[in-house]
Length: 374
Image (cartoon, rainbow, N blue to C red):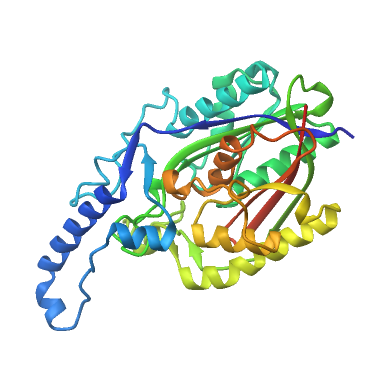
């Protein structure tokens, strides 16, 4: 058996930013346009007017102030309201692979590892650009890596589930050095015309490098324990799969083909599930909550994170104990907790422990207990 450790992390951040004010201006212009076109139906009570959004509403509901996206032009056009992502030729790298490789190279640089040394790549993300060939295999080729690669999807928990899978394979000896990469193009699955969720997501890619601890040459985070759990729920759903055609063979403009959630039920059901999961994981691993220096939680909603942090620690988290990055990145699905880890872990010292946790559709929740070494 080999001890796995995280020896590098990387984040690719798109160059384009949409602020809340920009987003609200575009959404409200769309709302005015829609309301004018459906004025008679609204007056007759056959349709409901689309209410305006506001920056104050967005911050109060989520804590989000801005988000990075691959394309803002389409999103901010009231007649389009989705990103313009040009189709690429088959011989060109896919968008996900291009983002993922950038994050992987940053993680490899941190760990002092060359791509050719990697023998396992997991592309763990909630939205995949195509069904096959696997994005992970394309990333493998672009990095010049060996071994094997495959895609996996557990929605917002994909990265932590990927870390457990990679760590288990390293423990068992079927891999020596692995990359878990999460390129999340969330802007393409979001319904930007829905006031309740039009502000939630952003785009990003993250990667973590995991290898046998005895082969690590610098500072690392020993993976002390991992734990994953799932429970089926329809409260977060996207039906835009490869079976989405109608019986007549035509595509429908259906609301369920984009991100949907019942926010109130998610809050009510996920918060106790995640809090209990973390408590059970800590008890199982023999780690007290007071032993944790940091919580790197899934970046979906500030209120959710504040609740979980308080529940786990038994008190209000001190500044820096439970860092949030969603004010800048918004919800980036599985990548959120890894962004928090990458940006808020360098100051930890030998022997200090932390917990990475992500949760989301499924329901799913994954947690990773790590200890700083070196």
